[in-house]
Length: 404
Image (tube, rainbow, N blue to C red; front, top):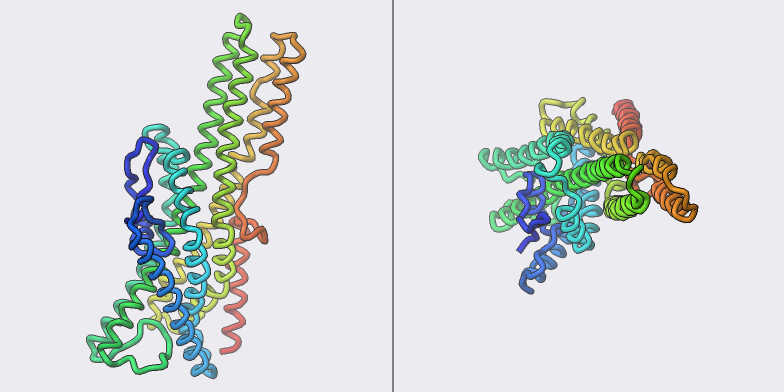
């Protein structure tokens, strides 16, 4: 029923655990197979609407909690992180759910054309795997947060209470088991959806970016190898100039294909990056405040704080990697440094030489603007922007401490 991406040879992809978790626990965003039965489409639409309404109900219950504790800053801030993350997931997950077919096409294209497997370039594949480690680390902390809420609920049940997993005041009595059990199942579902979205989207974006970067590197290496081969035979090969033109044209086609996919990734994740960074400072500020005021009673907030900080740094590092080791920015120089002048010196046909120069100029112009990640074009994602947000969170934290 759920879509399984496949490699170019048709083999099903063995998804890493963050993507497998995202696929299983976020049916709202994950697409279905092309031949899925009609009832599965109806079921996913029902789950989409049901979860959307469920989150609205939870948000309303949390607002009631805030109103009830409006004169108690500590209690007010205790429930605010879950409220903020629910709004964030409301915006990120349900927007992605509306465009899941576009995401499906991207996954299909990625694994068929972009993904760098171990057999083709083991060095790039190994480097990409290392680049996923920061995402795996903060994902582990998010899983710990989710488990801590479950442990809290189980402990309350063991003590004879019927606690709610999140801070909220419901408009009905939840202590009846016929109400409490479905309510707790809905909490588990919303929590799994939230964690899956936070983990899965980060891992997918990291995977897309680093594999695109690897493809640009492969393209450049192949270009240089083919040019070196042509140059060796150029003095005695009357067709060397034509061969050089064909190499440039082939590389340019590959270049355009990679550029198009890179911009698809940027368009797909721009809004979600904007939402993530918009909520980051406020959420982190409140988490740090709760950890500072009562670390022993807020273990889940410790995990959450570490995960948020690592997430900000990981996203910032992705943006900085694109800016400093950006293959798209180096492609223009690659064409100019392709030793075209060594080919021209062997030939006196002005039209053929002019055609080659036009190809080189066109290739440089196409790659004039380097690829970068942005949040709705309001800011560029970089380590500097992530650190700026962390500094802002520390300023808000200082303000909250002064109010306490």
